[in-house]
Length: 136
Image (cartoon, rainbow, N blue to C red; front, side):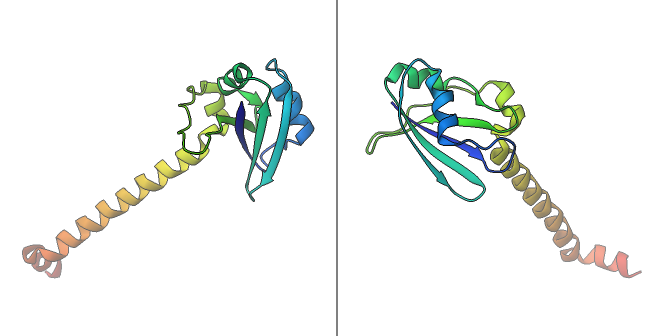
């Protein structure tokens, strides 16, 4: 019955407790509680709904503003792993829901390319015949 909701701060619409109650109240259950925590560039909230079916409907949907969508995942109870969330629709991914994964993939690719480039330079330096050709 509990959801963890996150969004980026300053990337479009910012959500207040009343906004979250209105958004999640549309899933057919009364919102029992909302706790918001500001983490700098990200904001996280715990939203407690009245029943589990409303929670399941919220996890499988795109919520919030298109410029700053809400990432909604079920909140795991202690000792129990969180259920696997449904795949996000492509519309949410285009709006930046996978921003962190995209940045991480680009950083990894750049690091691999740098290692490859540096490895090639070291191989040329180690080859004595190539050093003689460069000196001539």
